[in-house]
Amino acid sequence: MIYVFTGNGKGKTTAAVGTGIRAVGAGLKVLMVQFMKVKELSSEYNVLSKLENFDIESFGRKGFYLPKEELEKRPELEKKGFKPFSDIDLRLAHEGVEFVKNCVFREKYDLYILDEICVALHYRLVDENILKKLLIEYRGKADFILTGRYCPDWLIEISDLVTQMKEIKHPFKKGIPAKKGIDY
Figure (cartoon, rainbow, N blue to C red):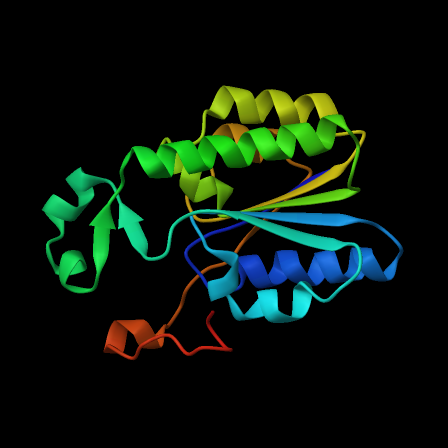
């Protein structure tokens, strides 16, 4: 099965992690691959890394990155610490997909969580044809959860479950920073 948690609201990764914990509780092996993130910077890593049968790998750099063109259109983001993508981000995303492909091919896990893969697709850090082929070819051999904003239509079409998280109100819009342990 292919599950997607998308939308501009909070809770996509949290929903995926909750499903992963449930899977471990049922005796399944879970791999969470984080795209555009560093695992040691997310508070959930401190707990999940202690769980047996729940592995986490990250393919991202410390900080916040966007395409150069987007930063040029929104200069306020640079003041908040955003930096432009580089070849490093493209290489890391490619390595992440290759890592997942290798694990799936070797049937190492029952559930694969591809965290923020929709964002990586949106910014063209991940080749959609490679991901689509992987999901279609192995959908009966393992389950996949994909998270992130900007879920493409083709992924919605091939998925079995799609949940859209919708932001109604968020403290960030009032200038309130994210809270460690609650938001990350």
